[in-house]
Length: 386
Image (cartoon, rainbow, N blue to C red):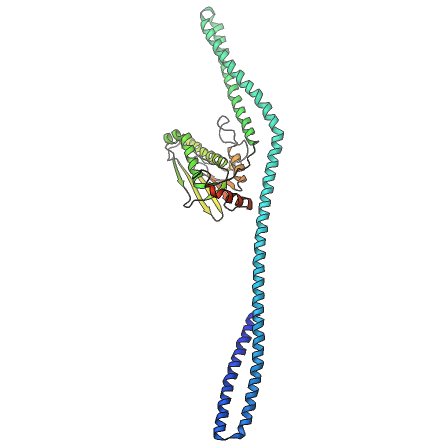
């Protein structure tokens, strides 16, 4: 519509200019008539000039109306555009509110689930741990008594006939083996029950603005302090690729350190297992990247890898590829719970015998509550202090 009006305005302006030119020509013609005294033509020229002025007046009136309409249309269009922008802004706010509501609902479901499990099993954990401790303590005590009995048997060897001595010695050896099994499985069961107890703890995040690069550096320091001897002995190389720019995100530092340490320890274990059967250059790569609106944390190793049939199970509670004496099988499950509490995801990509890569994705956007938290923390620096 505006284009049509502008076209009409252009046409009217052209008409008015043409009339003005013709009027000027008419006035010149009247002057010539007066000079040549050809008065018979002057009335015709005057009538034509009057008609031209009438057409000009009508055209100017139309031009004024058209110009007013164009301004009105443009003003209304601008108002509609502003209203559209306001509606889009409100729609974005509503979408963000719905997203925050969905995340809050997911968090509430997780908390209710853990609370229900906790109520059902906390008493059971206490009831199991107490008798297990008795079993382990009496097993150790009995092992000490068996040792004393063996010493007494050796001291009485000369007074006993050979057959009785050998039978007694055989019984003591069987007792030692049985006590060893009781102690081993007792402590393994205690580890599993304590793992259950860990599952029942409240893992809600205590968020603080954290420098992501510093978080990874602290993780590597802890790993080197705890496994430095193994890393050096096995020749394990750890490459760290931080972000080029500092990124502050609201994180629970203690819980995220648990996640990173658990994944790094799993990589070291996989490299150790592979080194038992083959010779290669063991490598762990810790890489940080920014992808659109997400932070990516990648931990890659060229260890044993994970069988394709087991990949969907590794985040299940109490599932482990290690022996019972080495792990309880809750590490990756807790990692996933913690990452979900940070509104993120964790996944695995692996090829058996070649590599394993754990990928953590954490959104870098903040909800309204997160923004308020950031404003409160911004004057304090990162979680490690400045």
